Image (cartoon, rainbow, N blue to C red):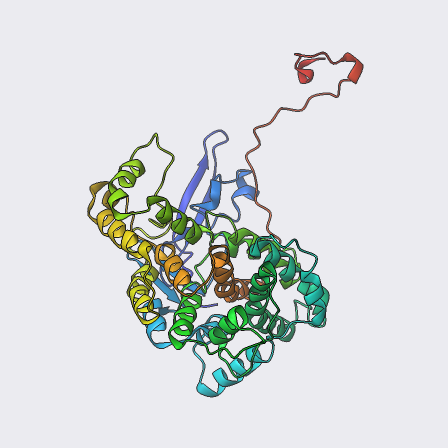
Length: 445
């Protein structure tokens, strides 16, 4: 793991109640903020740290993704997202995240061949889909089917074996578009198409989504290029909730299918992967550009529960670099596909107004990647309930890379966060016949 670890710098932490002190080393990575190494704090002082949501805590060391929120930078393995979005492809980025550097042509060809030839699902899984209700949310199906993969592909589940991990990672990257598209087809009562090895990754997903056995289907190259870009932009984003989930679940040595299923469930939350759905719902609620003033005023009213969705980011304090890339592509996609989406006019004016108003400038509320991705997905014919599923396909490689990195860490331990207990002090059990309504049973002696 590439890192710069300067432990010669220290700070002193003293427990004033006991007078005991400890020298806490400062660790510095290749880029980004330094961290305090508090690993010995509890052992030497008997004190834990308190950080709800882990906003100020580095839970691991990682060489995968750098997010520089202050300057609006996102790098995968050191490569700027802008360069990768312009010059690379999703599968090349998968290789980069998984293996640590860009591949040669021969290596990329071999990797692509492996992914292409793992896209089929076990026939038993076709029957598994029938166990869901027809109106099940596609993300609910994703959680179940991904978790069930361990019952169908249990030949390479030795997580301490590097080759087994590699095979499983290839399988998950390859099969996720098939799982996702079949979830959509099941909800529509439509036949399940099989993958085609003559199509690239994004093309194959669109084929799985929209083709029919009764007629030929040609993938629109503009649509495929946009889909590949969306996968690429969502491939990884550091220690977010779903990435932290796979590390937490994986630390118990659970099989990778179970850990990815846990991350899928985490991503489903509207505060995480469901944000682009919320953006579309907000734009539909606004309805027309003339209503923007009303909604901007509501967003600034503390008493009004309405909030602008797709604005701001917990990490970026300036423009989300992914939003900059995708905003340029959005209009291009709509033009090439001859789609006229009235929501785009609302979105563009809303973004422009928010950039100029002091309230949003002061709070660094810039449009983020979710703001535009939903409009592109609508243009591609993707229904709203599939938006987070698309996110899942792209983010699978990020989760797997985080999981693999953790498995290779010799210092890995099962995760066990501490808590600040605020419940009752110890009290004695009171027999039920001695308890009376309105009494504090713990106070009875």
